[in-house]
Image (cartoon, rainbow, N blue to C red; front, side, top):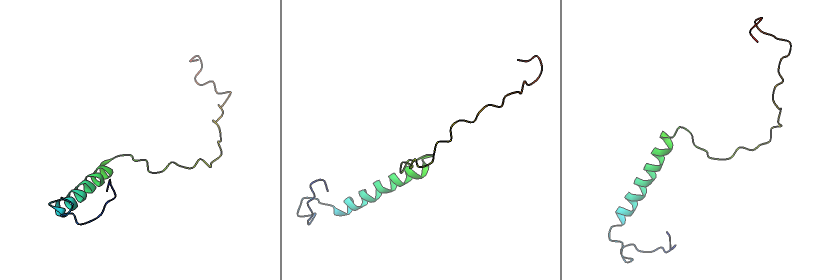
Length: 69
């Protein structure tokens, strides 16, 4: 795949093409297992279309319990 050459694996010197397929499936299953056990995964950045509402203002005139502040 790195050289983008395709052909008969035995003629190209790969003695066990079954091992190539088995390894690919094993690595894919390993990655899938990591994704399943990961608590948080970022797949796409969210679009920031919502308008910023700003911070909520404080409520004035509430002194709480007398003598505490």
